[in-house]
Every structure is written in structure tokens, then in C-alpha cells.
Length: 270
Image (cartoon, rainbow, N blue to C red; front, side):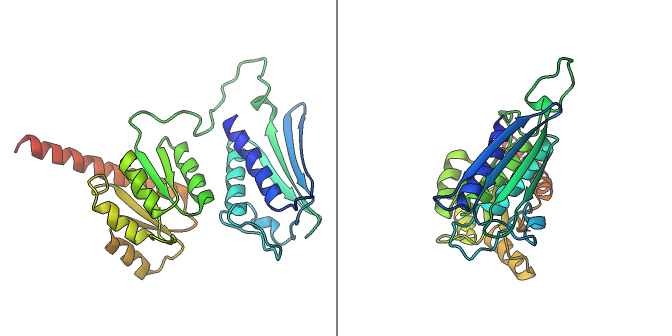
């Protein structure tokens, strides 16, 4: 229910963002014999035929000459598609054209909302279980709130305990409270950028041995060198491959745990 609520919330938020104040948004849900279909329709700015194929990719953005709030469309729809497919469903989008509104149509298996009379073995969607008490704590930092929250949700699927911050200063405050084992840190933030943030957190006892991964739109060799010089352990280029990030986190956290055990043994024998 939580994940499907997030799907509906994202679709309604996007419809509202790209529909004028006097426009209309419809939500229709139909329960059929084999599936549940959910449609979100609006009479907003619509979509060009060229934009539809890439709409569900991370960080895609609809081009529009109309002044709209930016920063939610592409990454929210990528999340929606992922959540729908994890539940065995599909999502499609259609539009008569620019200025003529759009329709997002979700199809989900009926058994998600109507239990079968015959007991069946169902797979719980990733993230449905709460993280273990000893799960690694991850801090995700990005001034783009959609990006931070989406990445945090994706990491929570893998059992991490994830918190977010939306600026360098907030990262230092949250980090001091949560003492995360790993930090995924955006570089290009206004005010205190990622380089300054990692230098400051490395000066703190809680941040000295944390795994810190730079996330940035810049991926040249000199950008990687600058990240390592500032104190990052790893450098990733946006859009982030979540599977690759999880593999990096697992590898670094394992090394971190071994190093901590080694330090404890050295103290015990000193």
C-alpha cells in the first residue's frame, strides 16, 4: 500500500505541476476480472510525440516554454515505473499533443488488492520490510529533493537505514546526529559544495572513517581526481546506477567493518 500510494502521489503531483490553476485532473480506478487499472488524466501542457519514449528515464525533463516549477518530473516518473514493475504491473503514457493534456495509465495484477481464495506464495516488494536494527546507516545529500528522496527510497529497498539532507550544512548536522557509516554526497550544491562538505565532515570524529561517495554530473578524469583529493572514497556520475552504487557500498562497508575490527584488536593488545 505504501508503494502504490507513492505511485499515485507522484502521478498526481506531476499532473498538478503541469496543469494550470483552472485546469482539470481526473483520477479513475477500475477493478477488472484480472487487473486493476488506474488512470491519471489532465488537460495541462501535454507531451510531444518525441518526448514520450524517454519520459520514464532518470532526469528526463519535458521541454516547455511555459514557466513551470522544475525538478520533479523525470526522476519521479522513473521511480513510478520502477515501483509499478516491481509489483508486476505496467505503465504507459499518451497525449494528443502539446497543450492538449496527457494520460498516464497503470495496470496492476488484481491479486494485489483482492486476495485470492486459494493461498498463493507472493513475493513481497523490495523495501516492504523494515531495515534491521544493525543495518548500515546511509546519508544521502543532494540539494535536489526529488533526487535525494528517490535515491534514498531505492537504497532502502536493499535494507539500508537511509536519512537525507538537502545542503552541505544540513549534512553536517544530520551526520552528527545519525553518525552514518556511508554518505552519498552531491558535489554541485549551492553554498557549501560537496568538496567543502566532505572536507568538513572528515574533520569530525563521526566522519573520519565514513565511506563517502561523490555524485556529480561531471565525470572527467580531473573531476575524479578533485573528488579524491577532497576526501571522497569514490566518484559516480549522474544519473546514478543504483545497482552499481549498492555494489560499491557493500564493498566499502565490508572493508570499513574489517578495518574497525582490526583497530579494536590492536587496542585490545596494546
